[in-house]
Length: 342
Image (tube, rainbow, N blue to C red; front, side):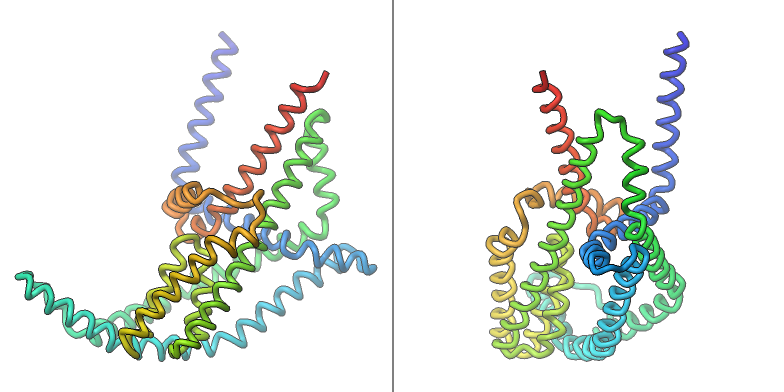
C-alpha cells in the first residue's frame, strides 16, 4: 500500500506539473527560447573561443573577445544595412501599391462577370494608409516588447559568455551527476548533439547564402528593381522551413509584376528554380546525413511547434528534432553495447 500511495502521489505531481506547464506555456516558451539561443550562440562562438585560447588567452578573455566580436559584427551589419533596408522597403511598398490595386480591380471585375459581388472596401491606397497608421500605432505600443526582445538576446549572450568561460568546469560538474556506468553514453550523446546542431546551423547558413546570392543574380539578369533587397529577404527567410520561401516570393513577384507580366512570370520561375536546386542539390551537399531530416518530419515538427510557440517554434523545430534524434541514437547505441557486452 505505501508503494501504491507513493506511485499515486508521483502521478498526481506529474499531472499537476504538466497542467502548470500548459497554463504557463507562453512564459516557458520564452524562457526556453532564451536558453536555446544562448546554446546556439555558444556553439557558434566555440571555435573562435577555442582558437583564442590556443593562442594564449585565458578562458575568460577568450570568451569575452568572442562575444565582443559577435556584437561588433552584428552592430556593424545593422548600422550598414538598416537605413538601406528601411528606405528601400518603403519605396518598394509604394511601387507595389499600384500593382496590387490593379490586381484587386481585375479580381473584382472577374467576380462581377461570374455573378458574384465583392464587398466594397474602399481604395487600396486608403486601405494601405489605414494599415500604415495602425502599424505605426502598433509599433509605438510594442516599443517595450521590442526592448524586451533585445533584452532576451542580450541575456542569451551573457549566458553564452559564462558557458564559454566555464564550459570545462560545467562539463565536469555535469558529468559527476551522471552514474559511472552511463557516462560514456552521456558523453557520446553530448558530442552527437553538438555535431548535429553545428552541422545543421552550418548547413542552414550556407544554404541561405546560396539562395540569396542565386536569387540576386537571377533578378539582376532579369532587370527586376530592388534586386538586392528582394534577394536579402529571400536569403534571410530561407531559415524558416517551407514558410520562408513562400513569404519572400510574394514581394518578388509583385515587384516584377509592376514592370511587366512576363517579367513577373520569369521571376516566379526563377524562385521555383532556385528552390528546386537548393532542395535537390545544395541542401543535401551542405547538410550531412547525420543532420538531414525527412521532409515529412520537418513539416510536422514545424506545424506543431509553430502552433505552440509561434515564430520561435518554426525556427527551433528542426534543430530540436535533430538534437532529439541524436540523443535517441546515442541511447540506442549504448543499449546495444550493453546487450552485446559479455
